[in-house]
Length: 297
Image (tube, rainbow, N blue to C red; front, side, top):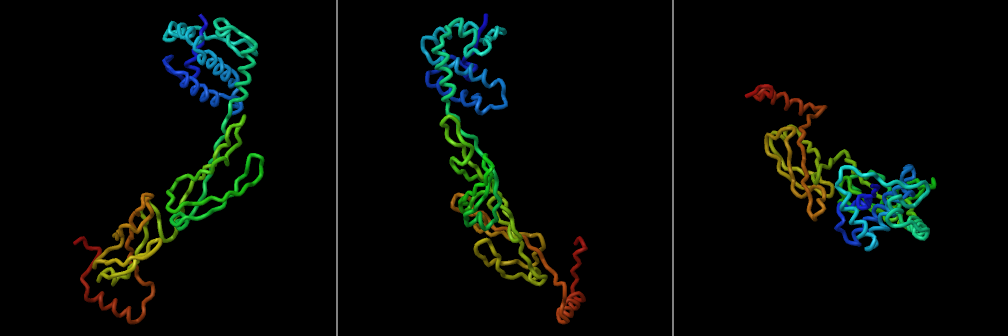
């Protein structure tokens, strides 16, 4: 026999559902298949007719009981003939056969179809900010072209400590809603750009600590600068290029009231030009030192 699986049409897996569940399923399906948001889908009009038809039957306790008796006998069988719909008809042949076909119901169904509120689509874009702006917070202006082709300027507030990839949401600044539906939202993804002094990795800030050969050989105390202050650290004698000094709590904000670490990578620098006295000292050191970095021992 011809049959129409109304529960499947509303994405319901069983007939053991409440009237509220049926109503919620109808709302979701109506928004999904509404022709206003499926302009390129030629079948959307047929799909929304199926959705409305299913809701008409299942939302009424009397017709639902009648339908459920047929549903139990048909669902689960390997094959059944899918009910069709005459050209231009709001209801399928299955509905007409078992539940009647009245002009009053068709007109009411058309009104429901037209009045389904459709929320406008969200819009996503991205913005680049520097480390200082992300750490301290800042107000930024962005220009976007609207659906009517005009440029619109938005001012957004970047919260201090915003995370890489985090999105800022502007309510109602997306595409316009349909049939009284709310406008969509504007989501702005934040990209944080590193600078010459710092690189952000997770909650940690990475920087370079430049040392002279004698500072590296003898050890010293020096200042290491973070994004907002400086810390005096002890450099042990014999430190090598590539070794790191980790300073807890001086990195980036972690979003929980604390901060990551400042990680300073040591780089020993040799002067490009030497004074006569410096050259003499290096020559004397070269004569007395037995250190050879090319030896494995």
